Image (cartoon, rainbow, N blue to C red; front, side):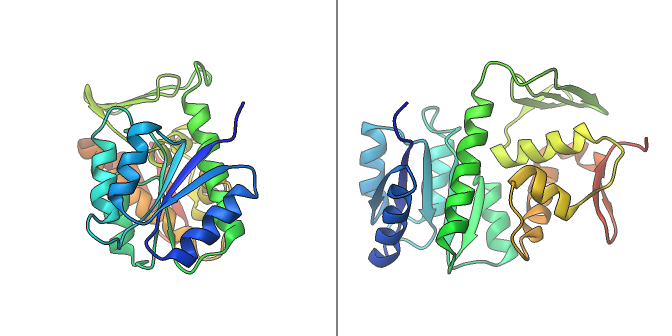
Length: 232
């Protein structure tokens, strides 16, 4: 199996070159682009295993690029991580709502970046597999099939990002059990970076939005975390 291909779109040359250098020296085939036009041309030639997008770009911004990727059958399931200096909760929610799988605010450490990249790629491979276990859930109008990687609300299909799906699956596997933010972060994201529990909150927010009439199934347990369904 060849090296995983990763594209990074970043207009700041020093950051772009550092990320490309780091990824190439940790076993990946990484290529950098300074704008959306260069990136789109490269995607037409070869779809990467993962894309890293800065939000603030000259011309077409990262969120616009992300929206177009999610609207194209060739790239709709491709893992995408946003790299940006904009780290407010609103910006994260906006990015996740448009289909981002992860969000890393600048300045960030290279080891943290590599850890998140490896985690996203691993999950993408798992989801593309033929079988991941029984994993069939039906709860109050919500239907989830882990093997098929599908979600429906009262029969209507719902499209989730990799991390949203993983988060929902984790809650369903532990139906009725209160999951702390730290536990969800560790189980779903496979890392434990200080302060990153807010990532869980923003994903819960966007997940509830997509689940519509079934959003109430995910309950907030004040001061502790989240759970889905009744007690056990």
